[in-house]
Image (cartoon, rainbow, N blue to C red; front, side, top):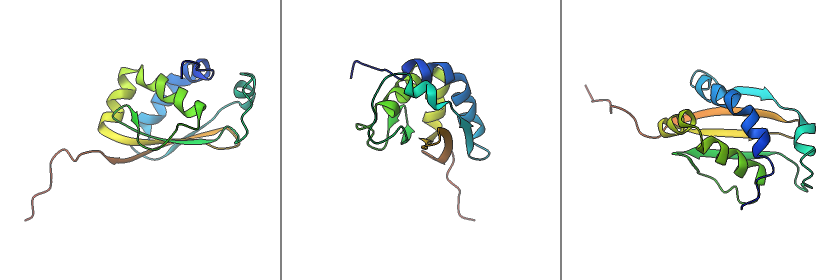
Length: 119
């Protein structure tokens, strides 16, 4: 996929998304995006604009081949040192619903730092 129509939108929101990823350590985060920005990209999307992207270690954990929007978001996150660091620490679920509400959930860390010893 060389054509990344949604990259400019995700690049614009990258600082906000990274802030949401950081804050998601405490509780799930959400942010309302503007649907007209996505629709203005001129892409006809039969399935709508919603998607779920699970990312860890800078890669998608789930299958996002059918979603150019999710693919472009992942590509923008891969360009950020901070986002890559966060994705090394835990798996993140980023989802966009039909109302253009972006949700960010931090799932369990990939590997526990220190296993608890039985007492």
